[in-house]
Length: 88
Image: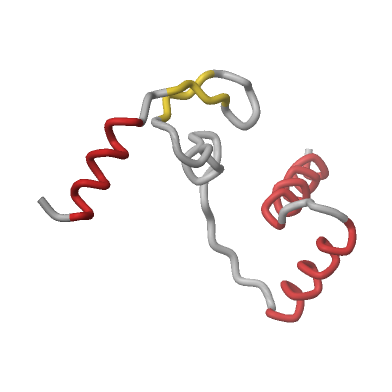
């Protein structure tokens, strides 16, 4: 048995499933320890790609850092929701 296989099996034996809460609803999600689930693993979120100018992206990142801890994806979500409401 290799060292890595022994570590893997020892770690696997210690892990116990636990219920985590989802990001928005507070409903339990089955997860086997480790880091908490993020947006990538959450079924209500979808990763997208958009092309914006580099200088715009850099200026937005700087402004977000200066204004607090809002994530870039949260800002995009907020702006897209506002845009949808204006169209109604």
